[in-house]
Length: 391
Image (cartoon, rainbow, N blue to C red; front, side, top):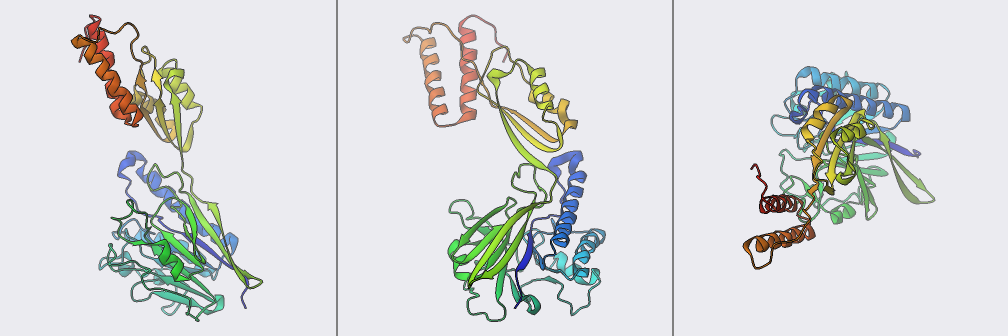
């Protein structure tokens, strides 16, 4: 009987992504994604896993030049040459429709494998599973020939009576149902369906952030993208090492994250009241400079009247210090001091109405509205004091 089964789980590699939002950094991020894929293969080799599972969206689209497919296949060949199995399912970007990249290119053949080899397998509606007798493992792929699934991929499925293997692992590219959030997604399944599947492990793709959970006897996990595909994905950058073992008649599944991506994401909130000037903000941010960091900076709180920060200028000045820097000013203008006009005057009524509206917006956490109202109140005070205001 085989001992511990060791798998490496990844998904959402998105090779060939265009990154229209990254401008001149797009090509650099495409290369980072490929290097994260290569690092994934390195981990599989170093850990001597039994199989690599790629749960959809290996490619960002079905329109891929042959050289890109060959480059990916060359990495997979490093695994198959080491007798490590590779199982792939199409996703929603490289969907298994009539124009599928997996129909256009035979990855196994490009990797130099014989037609009857099962070392590199793409599961499809016509080939929904593969059984590796030597590993006592069955891998089930739930794949549709269209981007939008006509039903849940787990509908009616159970591995409980499947005696072809000791271990049963599933692969899905889709969303675990969250009422009000995933209703419009292309492929949706429920926690109850996961529990009813009696799979030992369910390897998931589609969510780019690493997440995991348990439903019945089944451990499920999203590996997340090995390298962020968008600049706000702060739980991307890892692959999952999965160990399945049976001890004293009980099955155990252990999942461990392994970092393979370079790009990191971080958020920073700065109280505008603590800033002396825009150069002081630039100096503060420069202290966090990192060419692999996507930094999202948000100015909050109440700023002093004399503080003038132009977010675009800060971003341009520090652009070469970060992979990507975004600065947003969500601070509020300080409200003017001084006596209020009498409440029975038009001016007094205006000021009091604005103050009430500000309080209501802030209590309801309507930030943009409260900032606009604060600016309106500040301008109203200036005009009432006889200042000329440029609009």
